[in-house]
Length: 84
Image (cartoon, rainbow, N blue to C red; front, side, top):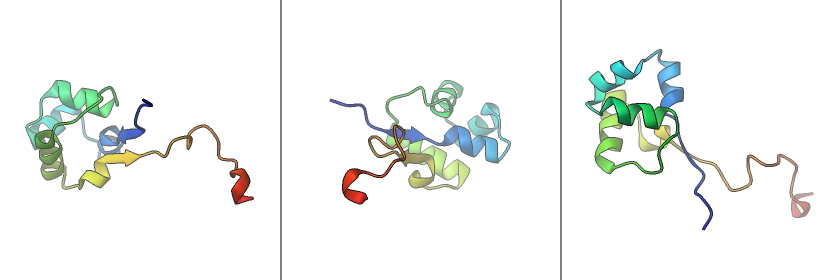
């Protein structure tokens, strides 16, 4: 089974808003360790409660936090044979 290409954008959002881990902890109530893992894309899952707390505290949607990267998108930007 191939790994899913889902990326958490929490780190990007934090940079855009000039937020530090402690700021996100205060806004969301999510633990510092969880924030660190999610911001660094070092986790393989997220609980609905955590996702909900992040959405409420940061005023974002799950779609803002999670990005789907289609398989092979990172490998090549060359059009597929059938697209030419």
